[in-house]
Length: 220
Image (cartoon, rainbow, N blue to C red; front, side):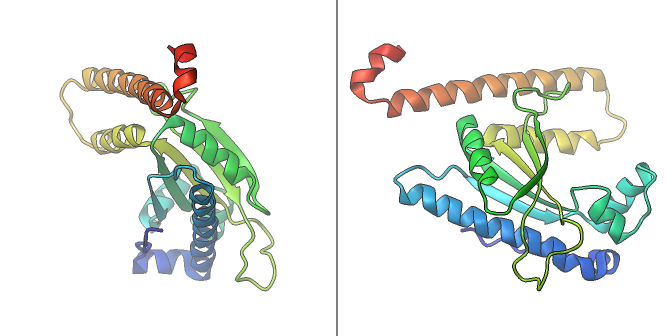
């Protein structure tokens, strides 16, 4: 499995304090479960449903700004309990079918508690954004006893194409004084729709390749 050290600066250490270990812990617990999920699938002769992943702890600057926007206390306690994305993992899958498969496997993790799920793939945002979001917690084995309140982890699942679009859209969103901004928003939405169509076409091609010869006539 990929080695992915978290980027943590002194600002995060100062802001999150002794709660930082909880955020690191929930990420590491999930990635440990994810590793076993991937090994289990490949061990059964199936393809790895995940192409790559990224993990992060929300920067102190971003978290403080979010708490301020939502009129919440600018504290580590509020960051862990009042919003749910202090810790996050993004899973990038080859095909949409792999996202559904991985979501199902995540739900089966022993002790997992799912707070919320949002399917932006079948119900995309108005700007074209597509992804599957989960907010969950799971037991932290390194603690002597469970914390009083769950430590939440945000999971985002995307295809490779969705992740490429989201990365570009994120960069453009923070550009200032963009000429023809309305046109750019329109074009981004068009690209998102084309990417969604391409994802479906690629899924169909994969199914055609993997379908036994005697069954291909039925599909065609």
